[in-house]
Length: 386
Image (cartoon, rainbow, N blue to C red; front, side):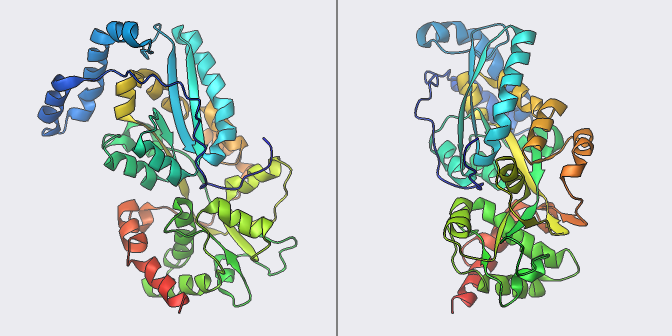
């Protein structure tokens, strides 16, 4: 795997050698009529797939002849899918994709190839919105997927299209310390001590860093505190933050390469993967922690354009099978399959108090309360910069 890159955010290394079929099928006025008719009745999403596939079936032969594209229909032409994900998932998908390809070939007599793009979750989100024609997105947080939905590329209700509300794997926050943990870091509260320097990215620019901030906040509110005490605690911690890097990768560079800070707020899956790559990092998993839930979704507009919905949805479903869940667990993600979670239980310490984004009000409320311009984080930052 090469040198460890401890990041859920970073530069977007888009694959410039993509060979996407750009002559995608257009559904035309009939589908727009269907959409207007059924949206008013709340039924469009349920029948949109069958309508799109029906129209694809009627016209795909001509489209293939003109464009040489793939149909996505079992037993037909070869299919190419584009997976867009965030950096640290690569190790798992390098194992999962060949297994799915082999199974699909055996069951449907059809070749499937993948174009893969890995980078920071936020930058990947922007790339898809700006025109990277992903068939599937597997991002670091549901807020990023929701931005693609708001751009009109994913239909509302995507969370109910797959098992587990579309959360395909999880992680928790980890506190990476210096060798020997000289400052005795054990809990979130230790980060507010006067002699502790904390490294974290800026949650205004880094989606992953929002998990860090919410871990700090929930360590107070989910153990009996209120917003007033949580605000004071997070203010003290950010007083100990000497610099706010743009994303998690830059945070890691500040901590490891520049030698700043006594503790780096990171993620359990990243330190586990680092260990597998020969880097033994001392770290602590706080007993009060946030469940870092990572979703997967089919990009409706693109799979309908490419005619790849059937295979794309099958691949997403495959990610929830025990076979795929084991691959996620092997590289440090907490599996969502209960049996696989039991199988790997020794790798993941139990969390005494584990809270979720829903416990904090859900992503829409969290974004508005904490991270919009003029919200709580801006107030805290203005106070610590005085």
